[in-house]
Image 1 (tube, rainbow, N blue to C red):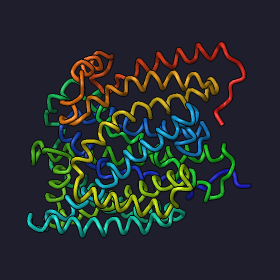
Image 2 (cartoon, rainbow, N blue to C red; image 1 turned 90 degrees about the vertical axis):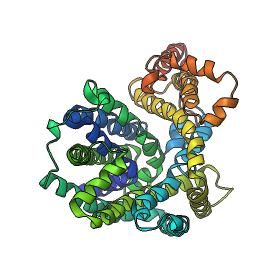
Image 3 (cartoon, one colour; image 1 turned 30 degrees about the vertical axis):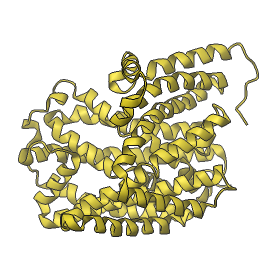
Amino acid sequence: MKHRLRKKEYMFVASMLFGLLFGAGNLIFPAAMGQAAAREMLPALVGFCITGVGLPLLAVAAMGLSESEDLFAMGRKVGSGFAYFFTCALYLAIGPLFAIPRTATVSFQVGVVPFVSPEEQSAALLIFSLLFFAVTLYFAFRPSGILTWVGKVLTPLFLFFLGILICAAVLAPMGDATALMPTVAYESHSFFKGLLEGYNTMDVLGVLAYGNILIRSIRLLGLSEPRDISYGTIVSGSLAAFLMVVIYAALTYVGAQSRSIYGIDANGGDVLHHIALYYFGAFGSILLGITITFACLKTSIGLITACSTAFAQLFPRACSYRVYVILFCLFSCAVANVGLSRMIGYSLPALYFLYPISMMLIVLCLLEAQIGYRRSVYICGMIGTGIAAVFDLLRALPPGIREILPAYDALRATGDMLPFAALGMGWALPAAVGTLLGYLLSLQKKGLSPAK
């Protein structure tokens, strides 16, 4: 019986996980941060990597150490009802309601819009999105080949095109970033600003969503024992995390350099566009478009596969895996063309509600490795986190809903009173109090075992 993967297999799994997680947003955030931080880019980068890479790595470790097959298995430690609600909500929020349609529109904005007139953009978006999701559909219909296509083909191609851009900037710097003053936000607290920027990438949600793909890929390579799969998960996740740190460092450095020529851009997409234009002219726009499209396509394939797998397992009598793939692709294509901005406005509150709950579930799984399974710890910890997460949801509500919600201002003010609320971590203290209470309750009980 096989107990360990070969070195090459670890690299393939790590490449797949990196490819699934590293989308367009992961290119844009560090480039914009580097430009704003300038000579303070190093402490900002360290902070960004602690939360932007460290937290997703903790999610991988939690899934491995708890020997959970997928997100639903992790959620069942709280209870079956919670597991169904949380799994469905997370996959829908980061899937067809938000991230999947955005993969097509971001690719279109960067790769196609510069080459078409405003009058032609609607028709061009329809054609592009149909082709984009047709490719996604083709690969998602072959989930057993996702390790090959994403890990061995799409990710290397993405890294190749990105490497061209980064190498040009490193070999022929635009200027000396150390001579530039940081913006006000990074002037005195660059480390903490970077910490917050990394936290806000929400890549933790992606790790939890891709858990079923990661575990299945490791099983297909010959591992079957839970402990062996856990070890393979953690090692592969660590390698993927290292690659993310390297790419983040390069993008931060390149972004900081660009300020010497272009000043402060409006967003990270403009930063990358100017860098590509500076080194390669018109060809740079094509190069950047290809790079972004590969980044988004990887994410789209991964999310469609993960969402369809999860729903086929949760509701096997409703639809088959392939039917879910078709439904999610069609819905995402429609949203990308007719209502992405509005859909994002309604999806963001759900993401801000789910993020603290996801973080707490990871913490509890890691804590379980030290104190053993105690259901009261999971339940009380989640109650404290869930109550506080409601205030994060309220903060992210679109204006139209805020106006009709009774006592919105009072509820918002209550949420703002929580410690660390300004940093988006108002859930931390209620979660800690709930966890401690659950632990004290568990000391009064004997013979606890995980929910079956």
